[in-house]
Image (cartoon, rainbow, N blue to C red):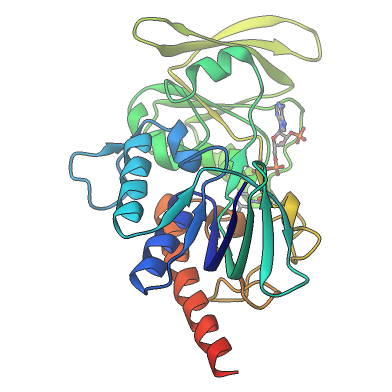
Length: 315
Ligand code: NDP
């Protein structure tokens, strides 16, 4: 158990967290980054990444995040592999405590705790994550050129993922557990007008089917919830779009959140409703959810935190 004191505490180790940390470190602010339990964040469960600029030969998610960590360390960031479990934003400096009993007292806090994709929670789904099962069509859709894929879900994310995938896939099956979608009417119209998309209503996925060596998806075992009939659907990939939940539980007592639990930041800014507390990355971005955008807002947060610290000195 240790007591840390810092000018900038960064919570989270995805692209937003590491970028905020290296910007803050280069400004001479000696930041501390607390990594959270999933070190490297959501990208560590993806395989190849082709849309993060700077990698002509592409890079895997775990490699990219390891590089970001090493870069932050090289620039002098103190990284503590621990999870913040409680914050007190009522007093300043802010106090955050961790799972391992560490205390962090900080002049500014940058929250980069991200969001987590919801999954179907099937054992077979877990087995193929990164090997045919994905929660991000923008990240992985490109690998399914001229191949059949399925999307599960009935909200705007599922609709967007299905439409995006028609740019690559030969056929996109949209599997939904009810007979109506909750996606916006305009999205539903687009889906229905797209000849590559076939909606499979009233259906749940019972199992993801695939091969062991090499590990890969070959199909889905489906069950119609109206008549209990079971069928097999041949697809090479499954995109799970059953929602995300932002990791904001420990902040909700202090920060303004939107209806879905995302932190609300000021327009064109990472500032939250508490002065000195900033939020970057997916935790405040229900719309784009991309690594490059998270990195960008991480840089913004570090610059805004630095300005805030300068304003404190002048007081
Ligand atoms: P939603 O919560 O809107 O939809 C989740 C979908 O997944 C629902 O259709 C739900 O079914 C289904 N579902 C949930 N759990 C399971 C399960 N275990 N098995 C099968 N299906 C399941 O999440 P989204 O990510 O789509 O959207 C989140 C928010 O972000 C929404 O407010 C949305 O409008 C917004 N958004 C906006 C976009 C835009 O404006 N461009 C793009 C993407 C999202 P059921 O309907 O039966 O509950």
